[in-house]
Each structure stands twice: as structure tokens, then as C-alpha cells.
Image (cartoon, rainbow, N blue to C red; front, side, top):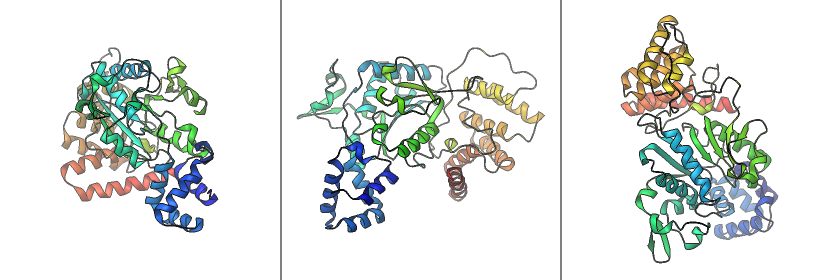
Length: 414
């Protein structure tokens, strides 16, 4: 059966377009869920659906499409992605891994494929982090378990199983070093608060998703992707979904068959990762937030050799030095800038990031505290202070800052 009220919930809460799923999928799924809950009337099921978040999750788990396989899209695509990650990682300081996100990850074939491609490239595992996220909790459990049938290996080309999997009966399981390379989580990309505490990702794979979303769902998803993607990061979609990207916001990077896109940047060259999107505006964006203690602030690869810091450095010069991994010079530039213009919260914020990257927690705390004194709603300083407070065991201060961060996020979405 098809219940208009249920369709509304699916569209509004999940961003899914029932029509795109196929005419028989939704009626069959609703019927299955009603039987599972012992519900006999459509009205009663709608009441249950609107009152119980776990039922929405269960319904979503049965609706989402799990059609995927290893190296879907071709091994050249994943070799291209691995090359991008390797190039990005080549000049980064130790402890600043390249971050990649597979969304939706389904049952894990895509992020594991990326892990295999990165291993084949020879890149050390400490140089990158791969995460997978999916709306379906059951998909995430299957991905974490990592047990696959032979049908998951139907992409033409080299058989990867002898090298990267062990056989268990009729199933294949990734070897430990491949499984350790990927972390899986549940999440809904159309939720404005999806991964709200995460730092940006250098690479986001978001393939075969837009075709299943409503127009409003796509709008919310793209807003989330824009928030999570590093300023000079890469977004990978299928070529068939490329026309669903907002005009003028992304441009192709390389052959269109790879579906690799970069964000359009201003003629001035765009925004650096260390600066964060809109970090110099009065009201920074939510993309600056992070509470993940283990995730340091990612810096960009080195740029060509820079001239020595001048007597009166600019904030942009300090950021450029930090992006190049020249942290000591960037710290000196920030300190000089602060001496010449003491009420500059962005300089204190960058100084705090540099101290944190150098392992000087006390100095970082002092710099972020000064930032928040000058700019109480500075999101980057707030997020890093939360991390530092948690690390120092100051739970009450971390909770207070987290409360302020949530309030600002709500205001940002309003």
C-alpha cells in the first residue's frame, strides 16, 4: 500500500523521492514494516512512524538501494582518486592525513576499493583516513563485518581477491590492513546536522545518491557536501548525476567519465584550508566545527618556495606559511601581526591552530581563549577549545562551549 502521510515523512525526513525508488518498492516496504510492528491500519502505522525515530530508521534501511560492488565505475577511476590523495599527502606534515568520505557507503565496497587503490599506490596508511557513512544501520553493520559474496566482485578487470581478501567458505573477507583503513558510521546527508562536528574532507565520493532524492533533498545534501568539502577538495559523483550539481558551483576536474569535480573559486585563487570557509566574516559557517579529538586540522600540501616573512606580515601570508607546513615561520608571522594589531581574533585563532599542530596545548588554549574574548562566536576557536578542554579533562567547560556551538549552528540554519 501507499500512504500519502508516509510519503511525506520519507520526503521531508529522509529526502528520498518515493517515485525514484520504483512503483512497487514503497508499498511493499510499508507492508513489511506494518507486519513487523503488528500494525493493521495505515493510520496507526503513520502514527508510529511520526512518533518513533527508530521506526523511521528501520523504514529507511529497507528503502535505500544497496546495489554496489568493488571498484564500481572501473579501476582507472579509483587509481585516479588514489593519485589525488597521494598528491595531496605528499607534502603534508606528519600527523595531518588526507581525509576521504564515501557517502553513501552502502555495504562498504566503495570505501574498501579506495583503500585497496591507496595501498597499491604505495601510500603509507598513516597518510590518509577513509570514512564511510550510510543512512542504513544494517548497511553499516554489514560494511563493518566485511563479508562479501563472489557477486560483489563483478567489475571487469584484475581479480583483487587473491591479494586483498581471505576466503571463508563461499564468502570473501578483506585482509586486516584493508579493514583497518576504513571507519563506518550511520548518517543522513540530508540532515543539516550531519557530521556537524567534523573537519572538512579532501575527497568526498557521493555517487548514485542524487538520483534517489527529491529536489529539496538534493538541495540539503549539496549544502552538506559544500560544508564538508575542503575549499580545494574534490567531489566525485557519477557522470549521470553531474547535471544535478548547482550551476556555477562546481567544475569538472579531468575526464567527465570520472565524475570528479572541484569547487569554483574566485579569481583571486580561492580560500585556503587553514583559513576555513568564511572564517573572516562576522558570522562563520558551520563547516568550521569539530569535536573529534583524534582529527587534527588538515593543512594543504606545500606550495612553491615563499619569500621570507616581511616586517609587517599579513594574515594571508601567515596562513600561506601554515598551509605550506612552515609552522615556525607562520607562528612568528602571527605573533608579529598581533604585536602590530592586537585586536585581531583571526590571528589569535590561526596562532592557536599552529600551537596545536606543534603539540603546545597550553599555548593553544591561551590563543583560542584570546580569540573568544575578542570574538565570542568564533566557530573555529570554539571547536578547537572544545577539543582541548576534553583532552585536559575539563568536561564542564567543554559542555558549556558545546552548548554555545549548538546554539550558533541552529542560528546558522535559521
